[in-house]
Length: 335
Ligand code: X2X
Image (cartoon, rainbow, N blue to C red; front, side, top):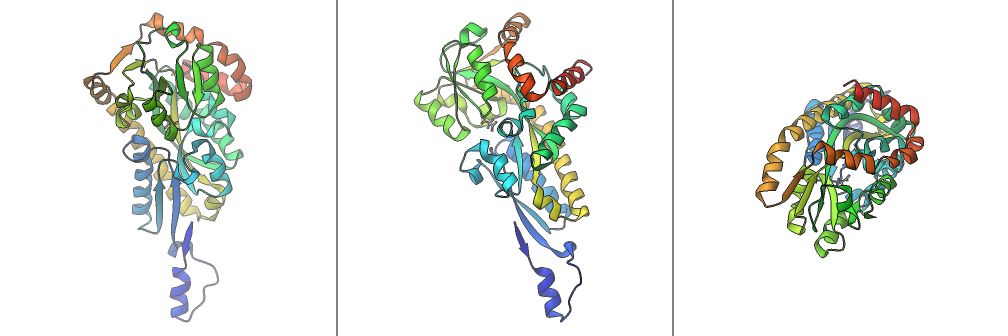
């Protein structure tokens, strides 16, 4: 964070002093961490936030986006800790990458909890979403708004996957939370935890056979070009994005600027969610056009995956909070 002493320079030049610092005349720049750049919806969400904040503050407030988790040297699971300690001012972050520090965020990673987009909204726009924001707040970061990375689909270089038995023995790259190790181990796969920065080289060399990410990531990162020829649309989970601010930074802002920052985050998040959902069918068509074999599951095949991963709930419900899970499930049922 940088504070330019415009107020001081001006008043000194005029030979005056001000009794209280005027927030209104400060020019400030803040760092914003993301994992994916603005080639992806995720990075675009952060850039939209920056654009709205700059516009609405008449250039007083600047958000500078640092993609590729570069503020934590690519180690995306350290982003939350770096935010809490003030190394990062703000972030647009996946719930997955913050879940090691905020256990409640594992809710979204429970396999097959959310069947469709309305189910994601039932959580994020409802009382369970508020409880999750309270949990993030309690852990030391101010959450402002939701965005979306998207439903994560499974790809691999070996063969078609349309049942749990096809996953057996596959070396699959998974993301930060240990929950993913459990989900893939339960399916008989050989999961290995790795940052996104390390994933593509590992796919290229064949050190791993598969990975899971939203269609937009598969498409923009050209994951098919590193041998991932088989893609199964199993919609097993979706990771929302959270717009968050370091607590000290938040408290240093005037009430007006807090409102401005939050409203801009809400607007940027809504804009990005709509955009990325609207782009999904074109993205899928582009992936198919490049020769990727895309598998859609029958209801029976889908159910086989649901049954095969059911035991993950037993282990993780107590860690996430039984009440929170039940509340989310009720909201989804009522959507
Ligand atoms: O690492 C991933 O797979 C990514 C880019 O989707 C996240 O940061 C959760």
